[in-house]
Picture 1 (tube, rainbow, N blue to C red):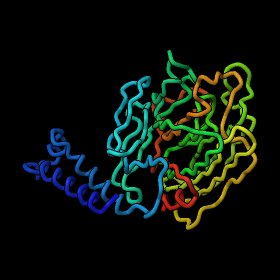
Picture 2 (cartoon, rainbow, N blue to C red):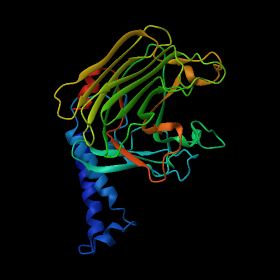
Picture 3 (cartoon, one colour):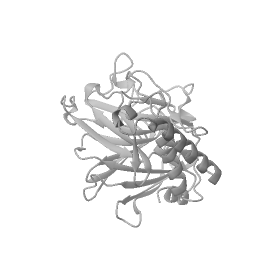
Length: 337
């Protein structure tokens, strides 16, 4: 963003705030309820300007899903309805949202300027867990996620950057997924970040899905559930970098590195070559565009322990900087500085 563009954001934000404060100096509730002038848009523009001023110089984004680029997240009002997000003009962010006001924008944030807050209750559902579209995991699976649909081709190399912070009360369940990468909708995602307060996990399910009949939920020819113990990360930012060469054969590779709040350097947790990283299934017709189209998802997707519905008062939440995708490790790392 140029200096002129940043100054324009500042000027527009200040102008909006000036119009909303007139006559409301001593009436903060009235000011907050002044929807006709939408005072929050002024704060949003100032937040964007601040993020641009603090942004690392020279970072190239293939996809930039950071919260700082998001203007508005609509509540779908129905778990079976997909609603596109409203990005900053010129950005292509999330294609669809499945939520019941479960993902919101949080600002200001001292580090990222703005973040996504993903909040789960027993009523948080995506369409595939709700009849008539599906009953996957039934009431035991809850989710609120943002989805970005994109093209993918064998041999593509992607570097992902993500940062998350778990709020107090986040518990380790059967699975606690905050990002699904390269998901072709055949099975469990080929790569997922699966986290709890004292564990950083990486779920891998690449290659040929071997379960007969219906696509296997966990049945790739290269499946691993990796768990890396950590100190308690509650209320602390954890940075993640993952590099992958997407392949259907054994010529792929994955590199996974993490950095906990307070650490100066990244720690490489996983570095594996000669593995399949994308997915294929012999029973799925090629007319479905799974070979050339996939989804990157972020938010929260949790399977409650015991394979039963969570209690009525169950609630957990986390914050996310926002998933970004790059063409090199250097860019992914610089994006998290």
